[in-house]
Every structure is written in C-alpha cells, then in structure tokens.
Length: 358
Image (cartoon, rainbow, N blue to C red; front, side):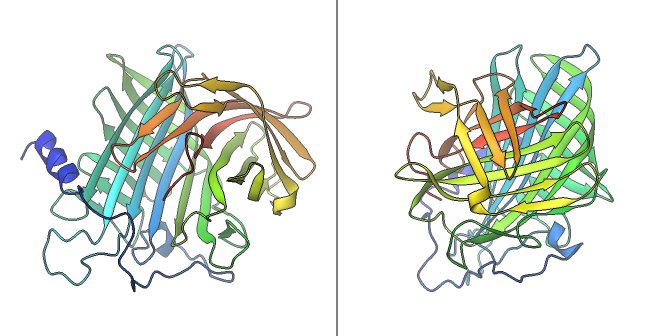
C-alpha cells in the first residue's frame, strides 16, 4: 500500500472517536515521590492518558542561514474498546507534528500525521524512545536520537547527540501543573543536544549543524478547569547552561501555576516554585489566517534571573486541527540575559484563540 493511501486510511479511522475515555477507565496519576528510571522511562508509558516526545532546535547551514526545527510525537490512550480483540480497536492513538522555521520563507513550513497504533501504521516502544508514524520516526540510538520526517513540503534527517546528562524537571522528574496532587506529569529534558544532518526545504537540501532540546513528558491529568493554556520555554544557553520555564495561564488572566528549572554552566541545578516564575508578555502579533493574537516577545523571570525572548520571525503559528485539533504558536526564539548571557530556544503558546481543551 502506498504511503499516501496508508495515511488517508489512518486519518479516516480516527473519525468519530470521542475525546475522552469511557467512564470507569483507570488512568494512573503521576504523583509526588514517583521515581524516574532509565532506560525504562525513555520508552512509552501506555497506561497514562497522554504522552509526548518533543525535539526543538536551531540549525545553521554552510551559508550561515539559521533555521528552527521541531519534531513532536504524541501518544494518547482514549480509553475505549480496550477489551476488543479487533486489530482496528483504537486502544492507542499516535499523532505527530513537524515544522521548519525559515525566515527566508517568512512563516512555518509544517505538516502533521495521525493514526491508530498497529496495522503497520504507528507504534511506540515501551523499552526505549522509538516512535514511528508511517515514514516519520524518532528513535534513540545509544546516546543520540535520530529524527526522520518526509513531509509534503520538506524533509528532516537529523541526529541529536547528548552532550549533557538528562535534566529531571520538577521534584526529581515529577512536574506539578496545579495545586492538586494529581495535576502533575512525569517530565525530563535532554538539553544541549549536538545536531548534525540535513534539512530539505524550498527545493534545496542543506547540510546543517546546531543545538537542540528534547522533552519527554507523560500524564493522565487534564488541563485544570481554571487554566486556559500555557506558555513554555526550553532554551540552550551559550555558556552551556539550560533553562526551562512554564506558566499555566488562568482563564481570568494572570497565572494559575508556574515552574522552572535552571541548569547553570557549572552543572548546578535550581528548581523554581510557582511564585518565583513570571512571564511578562511584550509585542503582540496577529495571525493573518486565524486572527489569533499572540505575544511574540517576552520577559521571563525565574528567581533572580531575567531573560528576554525575541522570535526568529513572528509567523510561527502551527495549525494542528487536522490531528490534535488545536492551533498554537511554536517558535524559535533568541534569548538575551544580563551581561553576556545569551542563548537560543523555543517558545510554545497555547490557548490564545480559545481555552485549550485536551
């Protein structure tokens, strides 16, 4: 069966599926005190409601042109037909997004995939990072990851080699997303990945090098009803440090919850409580396609550190209504801090058009 036909069958097979599991499905919570263990937690966690592997980075070609790259795989347990023996039962769904931020084009070039696990269409290994959806894949090979994406208008073939240890987020890998114990995720990052490979876009293939960031997160918690969406950054600092920060925005404005982690160049790690993290929006940008207004510059404060974020380009909106059903802004940003502190990373903004529904 040719790839186009397989993708069409995969997407059509998702039609009509409910957004939530049936009453009585036992989804485990991520709770304080849970332990992160490797290599097990590099793999899929199929008992949990949702999970994602997320790689973002800045690349530079031989001509000095910068391009951002994003590859994300999502896994969802819908909680329906779990006792069915049918190979068509949607016990596990997989989605994927990929995008290239090319300032020469002036907007994101992106694509998306969706399929039920099985039938040779999609899979997520429980023993290591090995997620595949048709001819898209993200695979852990020793101490590096390999992403291969053949999209409609671009292609990605990149290796991401670890240069630092895993960075556990929150309380030893348990990241709170609200005041209730079950409002949490298992969450770790691998910052300062060394990038090498090729990107094909606008009819040309470019050999590139760069730095990237990987997140792996899993949870059974829905977004808290008080929250409209979130702002998140993952940034590789030029001195070798790494900064992650997020805030869950309340529906009434302001911050419902927040958190962050700073790994300094020395290796010292600091974790920040909600009251120590602030996202201060700056210049707005309105999408010409959806009309949604996003703040595309920020001042972010974590503890006694303040950094500013400026986008590679304003138009980095990703329309994922063909897979996970949302529109969000996911963009490459430059980071400036006090003194000579600087870096590059990615900013994610969700729930700006309307409150996010997961």
